[in-house]
Image (cartoon, rainbow, N blue to C red):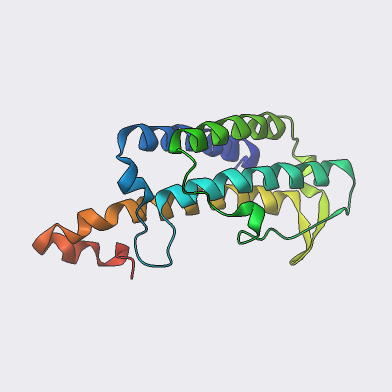
Length: 172
């Protein structure tokens, strides 16, 4: 990757639109269906992205405010981060798009030199902004893929003899 900031910015710009299209196009019951007991539904993945976006913005600010600043680890199971199944998908996707717009603005102001800034993660120890930018992009893709895998399950279950082609995507 020649330019991490340009590539990450381009990638992170795509996510709200992908989610908006999914939420607008798919029935609520499909979006809310977990792929297997104990697994996150597509909506739970979206909720997590909304909650995590605030965390990423806080961390980014931490890196920029003071070199070596410590920030806490993120606990997705903390009460304030729990999914509310009564929150409409349209509200979730709107909140995500608004938060992401703020993130994109902040990232667009970063320089290559900023990527070397260091902070202390409460669980992982010393980290660089470069590492967090990589993690942010991977996190986005990870939970979008996770959501799409959840959405695939009823289709895989109903595809009869073609099911053999989807064994890598079946959630147990």
